[in-house]
Amino acid sequence: MPETPEQSAAGRFDTVLIANRGEIAARIQHACRELGLKAVAICSEADKEAPYGSTADSFICIGPSSAAKSYLNQDAILLAARLAGAGAIHPGYGFLSENAAFADAVEKAGLIFIGPTASSIATMGDKISAKRAMMTAGVPCVPGPDTALPDDPATIGRIALEIGYPVIIKAAGGGGGRGMRVVPKADVLHEAIALTREEARKAFGSPSLYMEKFLEHPRHIEIQVICDDHGNAVWLGHRDCSMQRRHQKVVEEAPAPGIAPDIIQPVGLACVEACLQIGYRGVGTFEFLYEDGAFYFIEMNTRLQVEHPVTEMTSGVDIVQAQIRAAQGHVLDLTQGDVTCEGHSFECRINAEDPETFLPSAGVVTHLALPAEPGIRVDTHIHAGYKVSPYYDSLIAKLIVHAPTRAEAMARMREALAGTEIEGISTNIPFLRALFEDDAFARGETDIHYLEQWLKLRRAA
Image 1 (cartoon, rainbow, N blue to C red):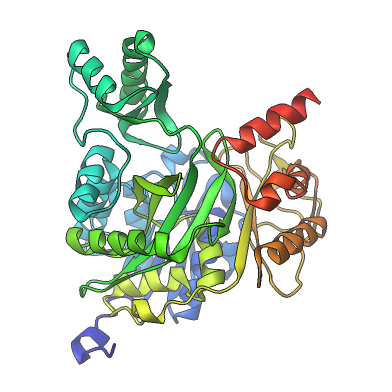
Image 2 (spheres, rainbow, N blue to C red; image 1 turned 135 degrees about the horizontal axis):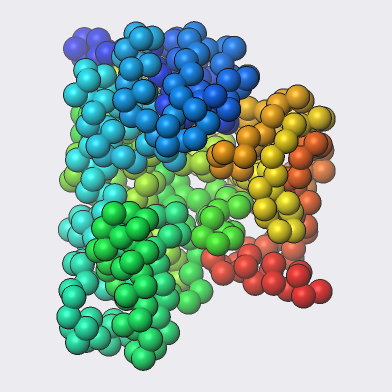
């Protein structure tokens, strides 16, 4: 769809401050370069030797190694943006990416937040208001009320009976697998409520909880959306993120295997409609549980996802560039009819951690060899001589493959893992190699509990 002169002139910034670190900071910097924008990188004391600093137009140290005093320091980030002359801030994922107060502070400082508005983040960040908004838009949700649990124990008990055991208790402001507890039967309900309320209060600053039906063998399915400020939105296919350990994703793939187009299409269109109803801007991800042919909305991530590359590989859309262009005010340059997803893609998260205990591993990378064959992509910020810090998340690289079929993509990932060598620190590569030899995974016969069970069997063997 052509842009009007006013819309074409809507590129309101030429310099982006990247309020993040690691592989995503390098990824965003690359997207800025492709769009002809200047990139400002920031760092903590621990990241002063980060390689993306040398390729940025500016590199500013904003504080000590502690994330609370650097990457989560809103005042320091805003000051760095002003000093560097940045017109926009890209939060990446994690840290401040879904902080409505930060998005609001960025806009009030006269800068552009590369993401949705603060109001959208607030609406979708609270799981109760998000569920209410999705039900209004016709997005299928997990059985359970769209209101917070009351204080009265008898009323809570009646709600649980209406839903049917087992149920799951969740923190309204939760995320990342925290603030949730499965309740199998009535006699442990009230103890579970008390424990989860206290966890929610400590972790998220609010004791507000909600209750849903606990699905026993679901898969975790995601739908990626992109929206502009002019009433246009599309969805870019779907991903399967069921391979999880302690609610943290380990391997992702696109498309989700075994889901027919006529089943997923109405859900994707409902997600687009929900975005239009709440005036959403930029990229976002709708997360669902999928069981027995039915989808159940659980939450929306109002940011770039770690696993966005598998959708990029299958859709051919540069999601990071699209996100930046939406923040500039440009009209979305594709319609739903333009979206065609081809082939199959996998992503493995490579973490600096022991492959058996999963304890973090800090130290210096003494040797690095990465595959570079066709159909293989590596997103990383490390190099030989790089010092892996103990202060942050252990993710050091993402290994992504693409091939015409799922079987070919699995074979390509085995080849890519075999050709990846990282020495000087421990990594989870041996664990990933073993996982890609698993027969049930190869057949696509897994759910969100499979990996935990697989690990228990390995430990017992």
